[in-house]
Image 1: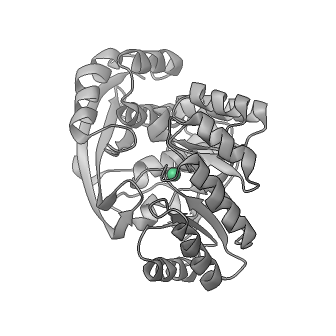
Image 2 (image 1 turned 45 degrees about the horizontal axis):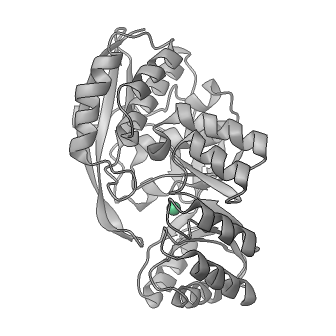
Length: 360
Ligand code: MG
């Protein structure tokens, strides 16, 4: 089975409510979709979101990376020689992790289809279900409380609360949500790099003093400030999760070896796909570090690739894969089933996505 054709399309799906973090506001998923066709007619799908503020990738750069660099490097190669293809994919240009991820997952889709197995099984996994949190966007407190209650009413038992714009006032936000949802809902707090290290320690200790029972705090400080991240981790008892600080396996190794964070958030759009994400999972096993699987604002193609990875890796103990449930519609037949907080894996070969509207 050889790579015969790589095509690009686009998907636009409105969100149920705008997605707001300390870094951006977005009201629709507008992503590039990749379809790779093999010489036996089988197809693999991938997806890349243009998350300029985090990965630096834009729609134009994603198209250019795939059309002008990646496609000419890998066309004609054998799917069975996945490691050799991955070497070309990574060697033909640096950075550009989202276009690499989109192509990588389409290749893994084809690789698993060639074995007639769902991808999570081809990767050696057996988990049938994942439970994801749901994101509560950064808004005035009343709105965040209402959104939290809606998430709980929709069946979610874990909320990811976006903060990071108002320093110590973020504590009040989280306290209002804790009071509204009661003690049984797990709360994750994501500051998206919004605090300084000193501020982080003050805010997290204040949440501890008020017994808000926070499961973890994600990326309190700037991505590049690994020393600051380390200082926060050492000075609070709430577990700290590194997100924007970890793109590559080397980043993950540095954080794990120095204990600059307690957990690592793996996203395919940061690693450049499943191949490198598996590398981070192996490091996490060695260091005994639990991982979260996360996503950007993505629809079902790439979130499902991430779900397969999580179903295959025991070290991924937390899922933040709410992309599809934030979307107003699901334009793709097939793939894992998104049933509120539960993601159910199916036995369809590959990732399971059967078609994408842009190629019909
Ligand atoms: Mg995050």
